[in-house]
Length: 410
Image 1: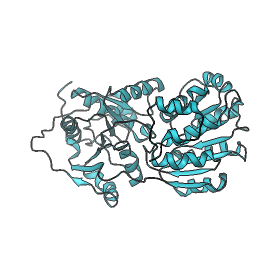
Image 2: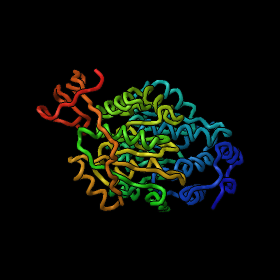
Image 3: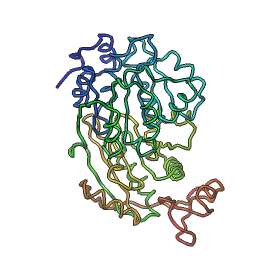
């Protein structure tokens, strides 16, 4: 096992790592950092939670110099990931006094313009970075290092053309790092086109079976939310993520969990940035200890100590399932992934069980579903194309004329 203290880097960085409690390197860190310090391009494929932020953050902190303008750029898919990476970069480089500019949409662009002027490192989403470049407030013609973080997520979110545009405005002699959990053809094509003889590093592609256990329950759609409440109370998770398919369902499930006496908050792209960040900061501290989220909002989240992942809606692909469950059983800790299946979920779930060993759980004998009524509110009627009662399915359950359930609270 290799130690951070053995790295041939500035003592100020070693001091920062010690203050952060970084002692032993993960597999990805031990293999990536020396290659980057040697000036090589790197492609690293590894699961979420493998320690990739330090894998690129430590050598960037070593190579970037204070007061010499923008020298490194890190590109990621979401605002949440950008904030998290920015915080970590600030910690790694604190004793070198490097300035980090965070660049993402949903907030005023003027403060970002001001911060970029004095920055040595820029961390941003592709769309907002292009916006700055078009305005002339961000120039990348002199950068030394570029990182593509969560590259496959950026592909899924439609950023591939933006990434190519950004790369075309950077020096040909830059050093490039690409980190991705999967390697679809489009990502391989970017590597061939924009990287120079990259070192290919493959870490763990899946979490060890003894650390993460997979379970599923068969349940009728109308009782799915009641079963989720029951299981959460029974399992009493340290921190839990609940994945839902839509923004409206995310709000609904979080609200009903709170009504059931559980600490839960929603997280999705329709929320204001300030509110999203407040909820995430609270979740990091354990208040709330249940986060109900869409896949897009949860992509790239780096949250320690998540003990449970619940799939309220089943993802459509094995890759998406893998990304979800990668939020638990991290850094050697155990975790559980629990999926709730109703009739419409079976088609997608059959694809997942071909590759992952999932154990069926028997319905608890003392489980008694409570009745839930989704009130007819104009906002949801407009959003989902009709005003009707629902019961918490992937599109809130029952159709007009179907089973009607009555809420315990009006």
